[in-house]
Length: 374
Ligand SMILES: *Cc1c(COP(=O)(O)O)cnc(C)c1O
Image (tube, rainbow, N blue to C red; front, side, top):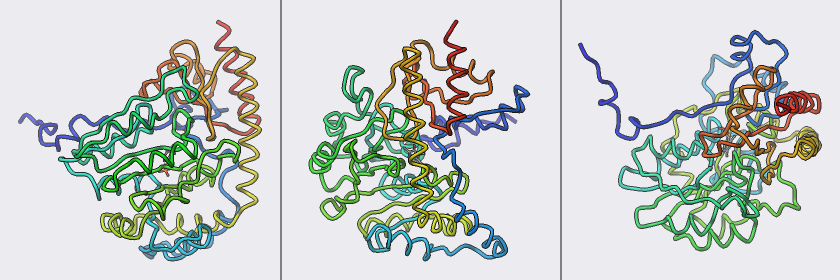
């Protein structure tokens, strides 16, 4: 019997390229027999989770026979208090990836289009294509722009047509690190027709420093009811392994997102850990301080190595290797350091390096210096 499952698949799925995650430490250990490994490949928090989150998890363990609270009452209450917004604006997700997919499922059909930028986060094309909708990719800024390879609002606007239902904007963007400044994003939101839903993905919001003028898009929720802001506990809150994120939107939009949400999409441990993490301002401050110092450490090393990098307000730096980034990635692997090649993002000369703890950054810098000397 000849099997052709591919022809049975939904049209969008047939040509779907799966998401390529950062290489896990355990994989490198297995493949290379290395033990002392530094992973700077997935923008994780080097400090780990808040001790309060860990304590909350421990306490919740004995309740694991029960289903989680499908409405996430406690976490929503904590978020609502923190953000000063009604719980009706919130949609919880199994990571913010989940809420990005909810947006696609709620608003896209095979007759509709989603708009996003070149070099933007890889999940946007995946969720768009999985629905069978059309992805319209807007040209990014040229390399000589102040935000090289960053989102170009004019190009995004020009890609919107009668079939557009969704626009994805990552602010700051991953893997570039670039961002739209307050006035730019505000003007962009103003120019978008109200019938088009705009998702502003703020996965790195907690890392953004005030002087960068990278906005908090929540301030525009009242003015732009077509706005969805997404955030996550995976990055600065150090809970990537638990999978918990959320969307903030107009309550009617939140209602639609929640209709397509799987029941119990956020597990019990994630719910309690996220609520506890929200309260731990000290841990967040320490995480920011480690990131600030590590960013400085990495930029100084790049300067010494004669490498340039893209502007970044996240916890990672996209560095121009002046040669194929994947070659450097493979050489770094041999030296026990995992980074992220971004050729699949249309940036073949670059390597995305997450900011780690001081000693991890030092290991990366030492290995990189070694690789680049020949
Ligand atoms: C890391 C990241 C996310 C977060 O993904 P989670 O599913 O919340 O872990 C979302 N958007 C961007 C741009 C990211 O880099």
